[in-house]
Image 1 (spheres, rainbow, N blue to C red):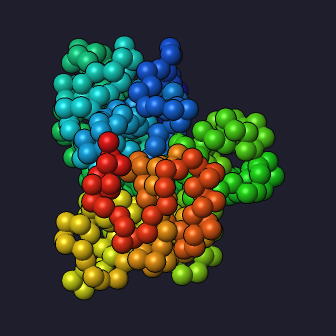
Image 2 (image 1 turned 180 degrees about the horizontal axis):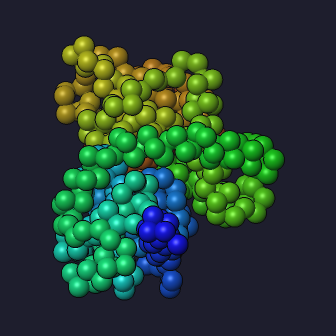
Amino acid sequence: MSIKKTIILITLLIFSTINLNAENFTKVASSKPVLVQSGKEKEWCPICGMSIKMFYKTSHTSKLFNHNNKDRQYCSVRCLVVDMKEYTIDLKSIKVVDASSQQLISAINAFYVVESKVKGTMSKVSKLAFATKNDANEFIKKYGGRVVSFKEVLKMAEASLKSDISMVTKKKEKKIYPMGKKIFTKMCKQDIKLTDYLEINELKSDIKNKKLCKPLKEKQLQALSLYLWEVKRFERLDKILDKIDVPKDAKCPICGMFVYKYPRWAVKLTHNKKDLYFDGVKDMFKYYFKYKNIKDKIIVTDYYSQKAIDARTAFYVIGSDIYGPMGDELIPFQNENDAKTFYMDHRAKKIIKFKDVKKEEVYKLDE
């Protein structure tokens, strides 16, 4: 055998070994995963809907500082960074799964291995955490990479977020959305009320647990959920005339959440010639009372029709069993009969007009 052929053969063997090693590492939980979220939706990431169990070794948790320290769990640091752009999250509260022990550890104290041969989760670059530097170095011996701190990992994730989203979007448009559409058409009820859900993992939970579709494997369930959440939901909204059109970069001035994600709850208030958007009537009233009973135009979203209506002539239901993005809400209706029907169906406390809403009553909804 010639020297040239020998070199080629050795090179192929090296790359074959590298690929085999990378494939041997699995992100799936090998024992019962620790799930910190509440409800049946706790199995899935609230940002992308992916299974926490399937991507357990890249899983992170956090607490939402301005939302009563609500527990969140993500499939990846990428989804954590997406959430950090909307919510106030204390870095000290963030935990990550130790890829060795599979226990939750403090992210700040973890040793992250980046740029290994293991594929990234929702990102081109893999980011795996370890409790000890020794464990991180042992991993590097098999899969390559380098050790960095949590703060550096966050910087990397933030810097690559735009390109990572673009990469994932192309994959969804090419394969996942068409698969999801096919599943929805052939295997599901066609009247799923998509605007009833605040996050994708809630939708995914109901599809599975309330049997809104025929039995699906996780891969099918994920494709279906992404299609419904990211395509079908907005197709239906586009058909609604006279709705509130919320810019994608508009954040609620009270809680900081992106309003476009919650179209059923959207409120628009014009103040000092500037359009402001809120993710619910409750936050709008907080702003309204803060600035001494604003006289400018305010429009809210009728709960049933999802059309934009005059806030000052609407009827509001308080104390129902339906929650908005910020918990208990004042739920608006254009006509009183609809408000009464909702009041009866959802065990509410009362129906009230705009002029009768009191500041104390609004803030009491947060208790």
